[in-house]
Amino acid sequence: MDLLARLAEAHGPSGREEAVAAIVRPELEAVCDRVETDPLGSLLGTREATGAVGTPVRLMIAAHMDEIGLMVTAVDDSSGFVRVIPLGGWDARTLVSQLVLIHGREPVDGVVGTPPVHVLDQEARNRAPKLEDLVIDTGLPADRVKELVRPGDVVTRVRTLRTLGELITCKAIDDRVGVFVMLEAMRAAGPSPAEIVAAATVQEEVGLRGARAATGRVLPDVGLAIDTCPSGDGPGQKGGGTKLGKGAAIRIMDASAIGSRILVDFLESLAVERDIPHQFHVSDKGGTDTASLQLAGEGSIAGCVSIPQRYGHSSVEACHPDDVRACIDLVAALIERVHEVGRPG
Ligand SMILES: [Zn+2]
Image 1 (tube, rainbow, N blue to C red):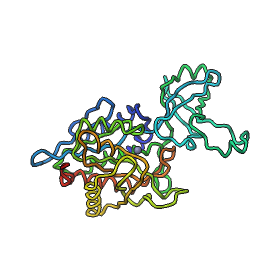
Image 2: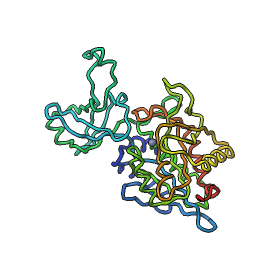
Image 3: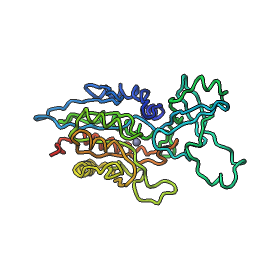
Image 4: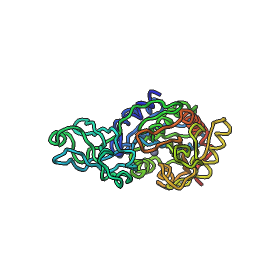
């Protein structure tokens, strides 16, 4: 829990993942034979194969370190309000009234301000806010803001991890919980005749970019992304889909990738054999590093294990610890047995 809290509370929007990498690197070093940083900033930890016959199968696991954030475009001359553009897929409604941190010359607190209901006419009350209409108020005079904040500075959500009944909630559960699952699965797994590369990737939220470069370097036979998936059991949802607390979600399809049939079936058989609670995620929306794992280089047999999540891309992302445990068990099982999947062709 302590490691997950440190990961989720750390600030690392797309392209500025250094603070998260500083937490992840020593954890990877503890479970890998070597760790390198690639030119984009992804961390690649390699664990050599044990007792392989011939060239070992290479499994690359990817979980992204970046979180959705904002980037400063301008500071208003008179008000000092800070204008921003999105880094990743925001729903502007969830940003209103949130505490944020501007990573300027020094860290600057801010709130995403909006006119109070008292002054809104009916039409304004009914309209959903747009991100381009929102500004960040630092409470500082304009001159001081201009000293501290410049265009290109990044902005992140502010939350501490806490329990919510049976659930865990924080900002950036997507995908620090996936990074956590990857690290804990590497710790839990026994020896494997496959070579394992655990990649903590960058810039997923802006288009699966870090994983593409990392996969080009690693050239895996088998690829596994670990990421959150939207559960179907939150308020206002029609049901169907995954449920919190019902186990690891084996992702069959989303808008970015169709999971390899071979790997989907193998993950299911491992879950059945080891009595790991599991469910399936099937959607025509969203995407994960799976797409980059599958398509980079000459392609790999790729799939995704997902942690079901409510309130994705908001400040109160929530998941269930039982699902986290199930994902760790399933990924550890794959590490030990992935040589049975073999190589493409
Ligand atoms: Zn994600």
